[in-house]
Amino acid sequence: MKYQVLHSFKSPGPPGMRSEHFNTKKAANEWIKAEQDRLYWHQLVETNPKSKSAKYVANFEPGDAFILKVGTLQTHYETGMECLSLVFCEDGIIGPPNPNFDPSKPEDGYNFKNYSSYDAMTFLANNQILQPDGQDKFMMAKDRNMASRDGYRLSYYPLGFSRKELIDLFGPGTVRGKLWIKKESR
Image 1: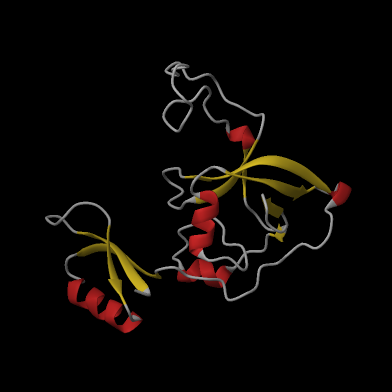
Image 2 (image 1 turned 120 degrees about the horizontal axis):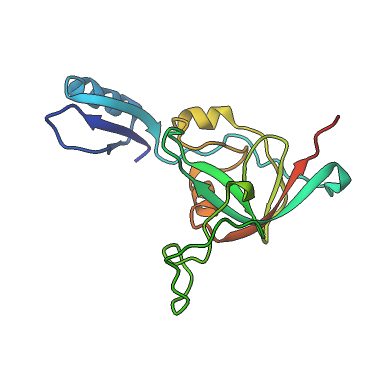
């Protein structure tokens, strides 16, 4: 399926966000038209949009003009932002201790020593250089075309990636890497 309509129904109707999948944009639009009286909200997007551009490989060493951060690629969602943010969490910056941490169990998403800190979080943005472990260094440049085809559901769309690649890289929260951020000029 190439397209999907994300939607919610007016009350009375099934609660929550739903999706319908279609092979063509025409079929999706016909479904929207047929259901328009029942729909509270809807958005037509591609199922797995891919950038039409190539990845922007940074074939140079960033040097002293950049600040190097080492850490983990993760996602962040905050109500009000209404999109899934692609973030880089720098090692060594932690939040307050979790009083419910059980040291007899392994650390995971539910049993952790410390809360996260916003100070460790860097949102992906233009002119940064990202290098997931074992991959090339990629210069971050926004792909507005792909963002539009995906309905702006992510905070940032770098050139050359597909939505699936981005979710596979950032979604698990376990992919290590490096991020270079250009120093501000005075």
